[in-house]
Length: 162
Image 1 (cartoon, rainbow, N blue to C red):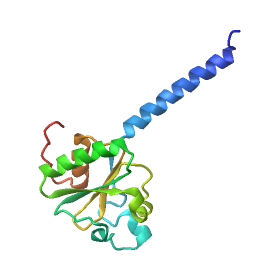
Image 2 (image 1 turned 45 degrees about the horizontal axis):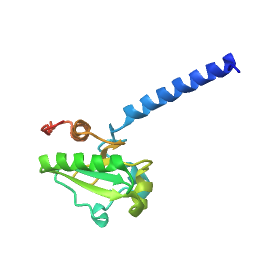
Image 3 (image 1 turned 120 degrees about the vertical axis):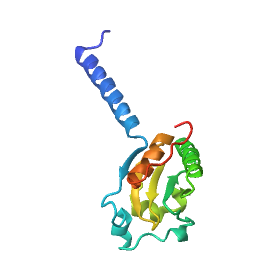
């Protein structure tokens, strides 16, 4: 029994569409975007009110310059790799810190910030406002790019291995 030409065409179209979707998905991993309304209140402010989130109530001590807040899940392999990268970058920049938060334990923040996948990294300014974010696994270059997007006037030093 030979397959019909229509079945072959449908199979090829499906394979091409799947490959294109895979490439698109891979290219979005760790892409850093400036927060909407950069310099103003975070997207959460529209939900929670005009004041920034009280991060200290969630166990986050804000750094002098920037804070990486990483939303992770227990069974997320890219989350562990991203956490290692952000710890390394934070260690190389004394005015930057990293805090990992489990999405299951912080559903209020997940909803307020519209977190749809893990890992998602928010870059906060010294007052706790979101200035940039990235979804998906991040490498060192992307983490440094997040600092640059969040603070365009500063040029962060490179981290070995980036």
